[in-house]
Image (tube, rainbow, N blue to C red; front, top):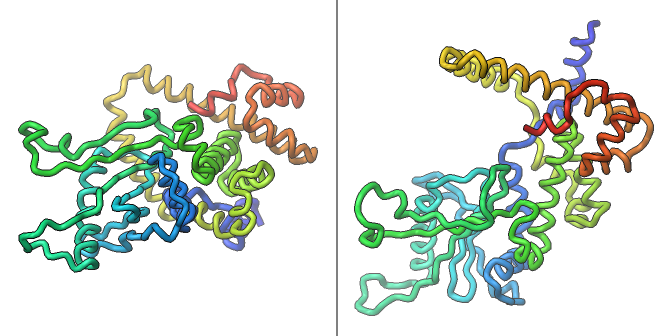
Length: 336
């Protein structure tokens, strides 16, 4: 039996070996953490500077499915005459206000129906104030707070003449951003720290299953989402990881290869050389970090391994200690 055949058998018996991060895992985890009224109320207080204490004063109004649009929203709820729509995004879409308009239209229609409001009456109906907040946790360079407006999507005319407007407030919740909000909502701060730990272990060269497992261990040890991760470790892991689909991966590679081939004729020769150089540098950096991680595991130096993920200087010292710094490649090249 060849080594490849043996690997294929292991992959069939233990599919988690080929697992990778679910593209939607941050969104799923966000909703999981804020599914309870008490957690949602804490987040609302942090964002709005309020101090409500009764979770039962909050009414969940999340849309499960909007039939004709096939959309779902993350969290929507009603409290003190305010209808809040909260969404989580890993990439910023300028069309969020339009999506918000669709969501609010459905939510308000449901509110009118539930409260038996007569919109055809000569008496003015009373509606909750809509508030739309998007929590951004992607890796792009994005400001701490910004606003997206529906009117920015209109092709012509003055904004003030528009019959419709919808405003989405986008908050960057990556580590280091919106510190005041993070201080007031521990779960949001812990969520951000947990995501960052997964990224750190991936940057250190660990495959997705190992990165997630180490991040969970680290967070439990440092009291970050500790109770949630202890009680729901399996569920959280399943939420984050998805089993590798070889056929889909190969199809994606073929499609990307065709696109690359079409674009290749437009590239300058020096750009191709630069790409090859970067690829070589990243491969060498990844090899060294993987070798270091394996050495530390073999020597049962788990504390040093965990520290190296967050301390680049310490990681470089370990590379020298194990004689793995024999070329000019910089471990930081891996993170370009």
